[in-house]
Length: 333
Image (tube, rainbow, N blue to C red):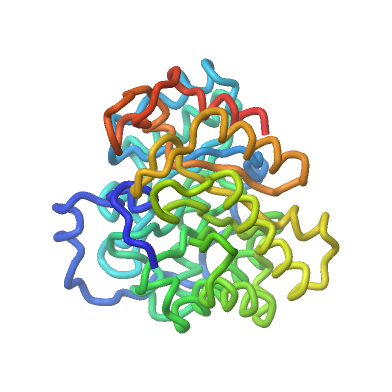
């Protein structure tokens, strides 16, 4: 897998938070008592950029909504705290903290939220929860805490993505969630090569079918290919290959398969100095829209600010742009 510095690593947690959860013993979360998600906000709209409240000088979500028209955010990252217990960055509680307040504000402004579980780094629920039932219980806590109708599992690195046992555990947990929460939208987000999913990505799709996991959208992260990559061309090529894989495995039409694919890009400069300009992102968004993709996101709203010549930053894109340009484009998806 690709080593990342900011993109979907995104320094998923602080060093202090990482240290706080390392070495903890496994604790089984409740598996059967969690109630279905409350009938509240519908599944998030397909254009939902990432917002991370533990990193990168996070902006006011409602201010960004007012400035851009965006109606949905993917909130990062839910990790493990004390074994199989979910917490934001593995340290901020589900209730009573900045994340809960931000979600309430987004919902109060008519917006929707997708919690993102996992990421590249940090202590994750997938390896810590001992089985699919306990992992589903941990996911359920997040959904029920805010009455959500969608969840994104950002499955990366050798501890989750490149681990057959954990892949199957995640898929089994999502199957349980779908049974408990009618209408819940489930999303899997994972890395890719320029030519489409690698062997682990193909396995994930195949096992989702074999286990009848009911995954709604498979989202690729088409970046960190290497400096100077053609970000539009390689994104189209990678996502088209995923579409073809879904078409073959699930017996879908092209249109049906595209509806079950998604893109999660990186705005401005990626970890490997690849450039996705506002113009390129607009082209990618247009292609995704014309082909009826099910999801569009980018890492991250925190970085959707100008700093031309600034390099790869957590608080800006490294390029010349206006505040929230990438979010405005995504809002139109």
